[in-house]
Amino acid sequence: MSGHSKFANIKHKKEKNDAKKGKIFTMLGREIAVAVKAGGPDPSNNGKLRDVIAKAKSNNMPNDTIERSIKKAAGGGEDVNYETVVYEGYGPSGVAVIVEVLTDNRNRAAANVRNAFTKGGGNMGTSGCVSFMFDEKGLIVIDKEEVDMDEDEMMLLAIDSGAEDVASEEDSFEITTAPDDLSAVREALEKANITMASAEVTMIPQTYTELNNEEDIKKMNKLLDLLEEDDDVQNVYHNWDE
Image 1 (spheres, rainbow, N blue to C red):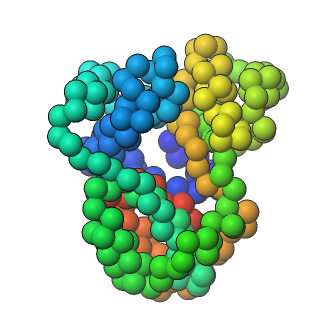
Image 2 (tube, one colour; image 1 turned 135 degrees about the horizontal axis):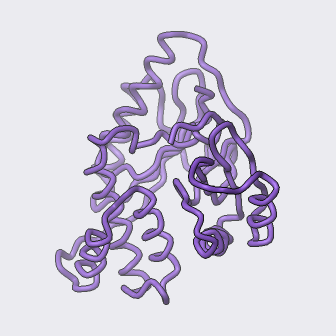
């Protein structure tokens, strides 16, 4: 979904073209495996798995693919242990960047992320060096063309369900929640038969950095592209005002 708000630029979207779909499904399969291992294969008893399934569906992952991923994880299968690691650093002109990886090889992931920062004209920093500049929030994006509600009706439904705020953008409603309230708000919207373009916990910048130098813009795009191509990278958050 295009979107014209700054929220649309929080995360460098991996799903920007169909060629990326295969990688997205692989990433989601890893998330499902981790969720199943942590809380079991029954989504009714595993809130994390429910959230990942909702995320998978919003990315058009077929139901049978989701089911196969759950069964594979529940059945043991390949004994691969994935761990989440978060790296922080700076892009050109001090743009703050957070990289979340889900990897079975921490050394490989660290080397690849460091290489991306270096080639993109930035540098990897220490843990906590930029995360204080972001707020962790649940973010639900709804395409206005998919709903028959005006802003007031959407606001009432979302706030009553536990949301913090609803922003009406040019082509979308963007609902923010506390991270722990995302599931409850998403489930309330599902019960109201509202289609969501995305619903996930994200990192929202408190301030944004503009890049006015063409060389800096080129380097920042290179950094993001290199991270996007890395199979271990799950999410990239930044405060570049694109």
